Image 1 (tube, rainbow, N blue to C red):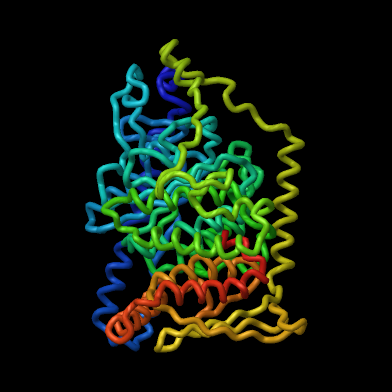
Image 2 (image 1 turned 60 degrees about the vertical axis):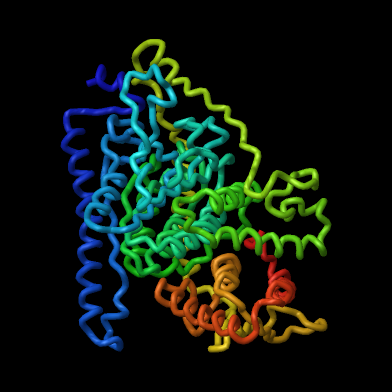
Length: 533
């Protein structure tokens, strides 16, 4: 068996591996098929009963496949990276065969899921395996988003395809070039990219490659996502009203895997964010730069050009950034330069173009395999020093204890009400905003001319604000809104938009909206809106 493993990168097997891998893939399929079948029956029941029936409020089903071995490094022709079969890719392909028009895959495992899967032959033509393309490449009905540690190609699997710029049209990569990213960065990923993308693409199934190696204490990931952070990301997906299936991937610190799984399961059951204050800092400016680059890139290069939302977001986000920069010393807040602008303040590349980040990967293990016709199988992953293991165990224990003491903290409430004329009334709680030196309730009235303006406010302002320290309520519904609630508001604004076309036209729309942006920015700037920039 060791000789067999010498021919495959980072794979270790025993006499039970084959049976276990088959059970893992089969369990993932059963979990996926169960949510699709339940949702199919639920939709039939909703069509049969009256609109005011309680059945209409039944949420979409979800599931969690707690399986080993993981799968997202395995390709169609070979195993790789502890993975035998690509469980999530198999589920996506099967769902397409079952008639699901669009399948969305989110991979938050700390390693790039190249097994969904990279063409080994194309990158290393002398490699002894036959070439394969990404398992999902070429199928416009499958879209993959992968956020992974990258470090300019120096972190395994060290592939240039794992960068933002790649040739795969239905893969969006968010390469992480620093360690110690945590709840702030991963939540910003959900707010700024994942949720708008899902809202625009409207998939019939969401699959998550749910690795916990980005969790606190993991020796491979060296990231800082807390158990509540994993629960928060899961809750955002579970609340969308779309069938959801989480499939376990990597995780090399058992206590972090246990607690991460626990909070994900709670989120699947409750479909609400954890009631704990678990994030205490803004996202890294370097991470936000990576995220904005991805948005800027994929607003131009996406499958079937289905995402005009990104184009509007980047344009309007730049308007916000420029407005704040006008009142801020840009030398101190360089990160607020418009997206696409160079560091020296001069005009950057043409719209949609960014300089490619340097690639420093050397793939030593592959070079050794090419030279010796064998992969190393011993001494690759020495155990961690017990004292360090104990330190992370204690930290996790203290964090969980802190959660239990911090579940009923008070948060201010921010009310938004949208009327039938498209006017949004913003009511800030007492003491949040000071006017003329006094603490007062604050009311502001905004008019939306189209749904993209509303979606920008929802995804880029309200959700992050709700995430930090204020409970936001929109039209008497606490955020985050489920998919059907958000669709109702969008349809309302679309109707208003059509009426504006017939009555007023759009001559002054841009000028008016910029004025509204400046007014709302004056309000949110006093609440430290790091999430906007």
